[in-house]
Structures are given as structure tokens and as C-alpha cells.
Length: 325
Image (cartoon, rainbow, N blue to C red):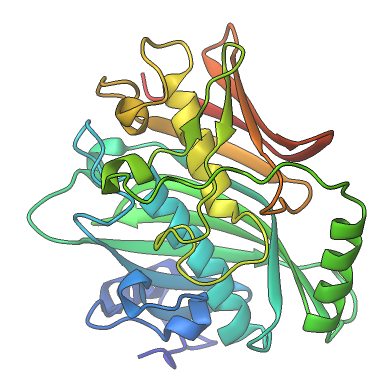
């Protein structure tokens, strides 16, 4: 199924063929876990893909009704971060499968955004949610560098033929030698600092999903980094994972401007039926595991929340979030 390619000279209008291709995507099995950088097959959401034109692809994904990390929103819709993970996997998979990026190369996400337009289409039902992602890949003009791949993936996400969200991800992919040099420069530039506190061994599964602890000034928290966490560190990492930062931003955005603190209610907006409508994030530098990360959130008059994750004087990532009305 992964080998399917649409005809280059269709007799019917292209969009008609694309609709047929979407209907023909298989959701029976997942793609190889290696092609989405997952250690466990249970963490693979992608199921199929077809070529739909020059630098255009259709990707099938199945979102679980429940997940160890990403549970249904209090609003009844699929967890916002399930879609973010599907976007992440789609970018990695297409790079390996269709753009000849070798396994073992390192993906550095520079930006990732997701905006939900139809939350009703994402309502959790009696089974997994079949999702179709229409992806356009934008790459720089000019010759291809075999040791580096830059791309932007612009995505339209559909459920049951209904567009429900749009996303975009910018990535740079480099080989192991360049990655090692990049990480070494980052480590030597950082002075020694306090080790980020891990979650206590006796913490419940629910509390381990709460990433904000030790509130400081209003709208400021310390990020809880636990390298033994089976979800955020599903496979070993030498830096703070981007998905962990994005989840921390989500939790901070839902807490900002609402009653409550960074306790068990953080994942649900301090107990209210609130979910994110959008998140636009940019990543600047790697976060080191042995350094404290501070997450800060500030509400703006137009209803958005501006977020940042810092490590000492370095800004690791910034984002702007909007809660659903």
C-alpha cells in the first residue's frame, strides 16, 4: 500500500483522483516504527501514504481513543497533542520514505504550528479516529546536500472528509557527524547549573503527566524533566524533547488566566472544559537535561497566551497559544 502512486497524466480531474486516493488509504496496519523515530509500535500513528503530485502526499493516521499521555479533552474531542504527534510523525516519515533521508540522521524541528478549525470533527467516538493528512512539502531551490535536508511541511488535516485543522512544521535534518559537533558546541557554551528535579518515584501516573512544578512569580513554573518517563522519553534523548516542551506550553496556556495551580488539574485547564484552539511554536536551541528549564506564560488582551521556555539566559523555545472559545 505504501508504494501507491497516482497517475502522472490522469484522465479525470486531479482533485477527483485525490479524493479517490484518500478513500483508498489503508488504516489496517502501521508504518515501520523506525520511519517515525519511535521505539514502540504502539506509539506509531501513521498507517499509509500515497504520492498525490509534485511534493504533495496523502498520509493516513489512526488516533487512539485513549493514550498513556494524551487522553480525550474535557470537551470530548481528541487530545490536541495527538494531532501534534501525528504532524511530527508525518514530517519524519515523508523525509525518509520519499526524500531519501537516511535512517540515523537527526531531525531538528525549527517550528511547529497547529490550528484547529472544526473541533466537532475531532470528537472521540466508539473507535479510533481515522485521519487523512494532505501534505505539501516545500524545500529550498538548488542542489541537494546529502548531509543536510531542509523542508517545511504544510498540512491540511481531515476526518471523514471534513477539514478540521491545519498544521505546518519546519525541520532541518543533519547527519550524525554534524549533529555531534552541534551538540558539543551547545554543551560547552553552557556553564554548570543545578540538575532539573525529576519526578518522585512514588508519583502517580496522573501526576507524572503534569510537567509544571514549583510555581515562582505569577505565570512562571519550573519544568519537570524525568528522563525515565516512558512517554516523553519513549526512546533515549540527549536533550529536552520538543514534544515535552510543547506539552508544557499547552499546560501553561490552559492554566494562565484561570483559577488553580499546576497540580493534577493542569492538563484540563484547572478543571474547566477548555482545550487549545491553536499553538504556534518556534524552537531556538537544545535544552540540556542537567539544567533547570523555566516556563513562562503571559496572557494578552486579544485572548492569546505568549509562552517561553528558558534555561539560564538562553531561550529554548517560544510559542503563542489560543484557547478555544
